[in-house]
Length: 327
Figure: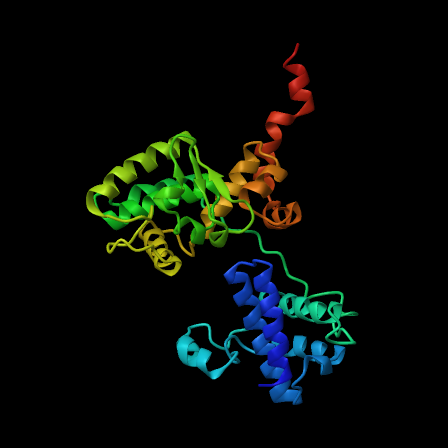
């Protein structure tokens, strides 16, 4: 075991002591183990204290050129995840993915420097990450969403379940992962609220749903209880929690059935955010509802309304029109 391993283990213990979410910790460790392997194999560097600014810049260039899954943290990871069977193997990594790697590595070196494990912080003068070309988020139109909902055969357990999930996602803006982990004990049908355990979510610990959604959930629970015995709001035929990958596949199949291409479940969260703003909601409240770490995150993701959106949103607030209404 080299010193680099000890440094990473120490950092991960610190992360655990800060009660970081398992998903966040896994992201840190994956980025650091891959970086460590590169430093050892390419530069024979076995201690974090030997890493310099030039190594970081070279690594950024390397990440920009290498394809996806061409390097893994260790051989066990490769054997488990089977990267050779992935359809996107060797495709270029996105700037967003590269920036996520760099951010995680930077946090690690900042920790080592602040705790005097290293004398030189190789990230000290690296101020900028790669420029991410902002891509407007994807949406479903009202017609597309209604067609999707109408296409479900609600006499079948799995289709009724998936239909209800779609409605809950667009009504609350919840993330798919946290939605699929909701248990019956997390539900408050009187206050129309859902408690989200800290280990299952980011930021805000609960969500409110509409009265209309309350009707759909009540009917779904009555249907579910007739055929499945499970502690989860949305379960498989065996009563176990539905996985994200399972629902994503189902959703794409449902969308294709009504002619909607390139659809994915996150579009429903996007739809919630856009409709919230278009209906007069403010960005600060939206940020809290979505569980973002800051309003800046929300602004970057959702303040890209097109000309038609602006036209519709402007109409009720025209100064002249409102003045003339008082005549």
